[in-house]
Image (cartoon, rainbow, N blue to C red; front, side, top):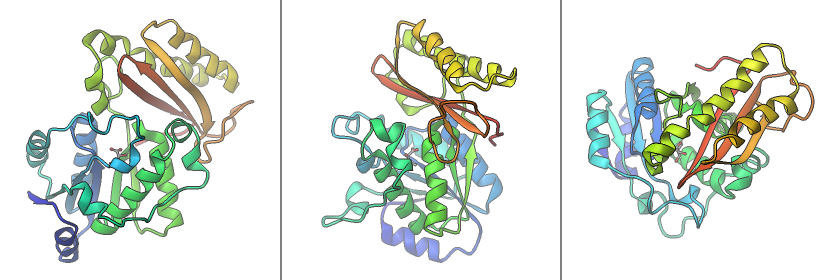
Length: 282
Ligand code: PAF
């Protein structure tokens, strides 16, 4: 497994490759969710490239950039065991050298849901992912459904900027009781981790009710809100039912695929989770 730390080496190594390339961009501290992307990238392409970069530009000034969990040697061991061909681990100065000033912003998709609560977050995500696309020029890029808005926005970015890349959205990987895997779950105490199962329970209740025929978005939203309200450790930030493509909030009847998404503070962790209704992921 080749470990690359500079953009010049990444460029020259990439230029020598003619095979299909699967890219799994990550911020490290890998868990089974990341590894599911890596396995798929390996299975569907000749070469699998993983990037590990805690991207400063997608963190707000009050967010957890400094404390974001990191364990590079463990990550590299895991990726070696998965048979990954290349890992790109640049430093912040390598990707944002002094004088850096180019940013990518999606006019509408960046400003709603997570974007409304985390100003600048998706500008950072869109910019870093476009840079990683340019550096690695993958045939396919793998992202988790867990970060649904990110995946939807990157699909738009690929189309708007004419990247010749297939975006593959992989299903959320969950712990036994349903909590979506996330590097930030490490902020939870054992008790909070158990209780955080309420996020998926609430989403599942909405999903089951939808499958039984309910199409009133407000009723589904209320079901989720009530379920979360019954768990004292859960402090919901938003409960949204939005069009899966435009992310416009649905007020009346659901007639097209929707993203049901929630953000909930549990202890030190701000957790997000979602289900998609009316469409299959995977
Ligand atoms: O999903 C993530 O881990 C990050 O947002 C990404 C896509 C690696 C960009 O920094």
